[in-house]
Image (cartoon, rainbow, N blue to C red; front, side, top):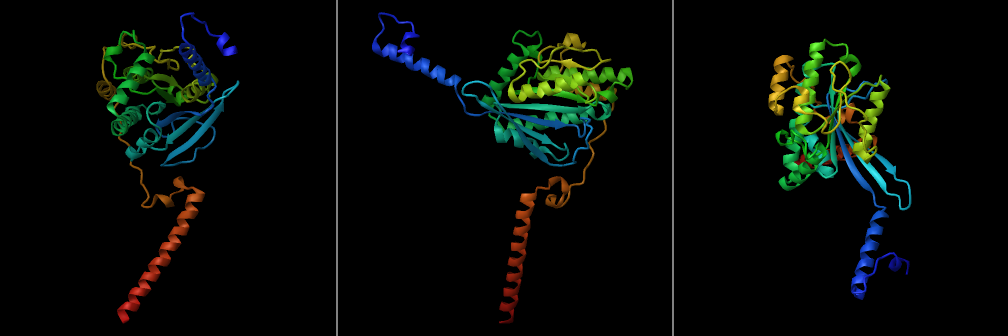
Length: 335
């Protein structure tokens, strides 16, 4: 009778009405005790080697996958899973960019665009490649209805009452732009830093993204970047950006929806004009051509022990089959 006692009763209600209330209440309680796994997906891509680390990263041309898992505390604890995809290079990556979105869908998808601040003459080249790749992946793998629904959710993240909302081309998933190697960037000429910061703030504002600068040599920036990744992957902390900083003489931190065209000091614009303006101030170099091996399976960057062993077995089977076929053909020719 405890469930019945917890519900306010109306003398005019029938048994069916009371039963319906009980079922509704029970379903509500069951939803809080849901123990099935909750998944989110983070796609990390951008400039090669943009995040400076103390260790030497293993070079790769491939798309790498890993995952993180966290179990919430309390009764009926839910398992939270974060799928993490990392693109090793932007060269010849059109098909690879589609994989995370095609594998997990748009509803729980987010992207972290990492750019090398120490190379201002490559920054827009890399950023444009990333944005075009993500937009093409959306068009090929998501319906227009799904894109529109997620785009509306992102507009709410920016702020439905934001003064610039109607001038933005918001992407239909959360994006955090990370400017890596800030420790090297801070030593560049002040005018170059001003152009870079204006460009990144403009594009982040235009697509509804957050923007942070990063270096492993700054504890505060490291923690903020880690919190931002946890926010995308697990939803906590609920606010990874404890501050807002827009001065080009220091590390930039711009949370979702915290910027405006007026604050940046530009008129409303779009990504194409942002790129043209930046490239006119800091001419961009083209994307480097990387030699792709004829057989990627023989490249060290694609090495996977289990798969390589299976591949070797299949190669041996193929060679035996070819030899048997060759012998049979010779025998039939003699006859």
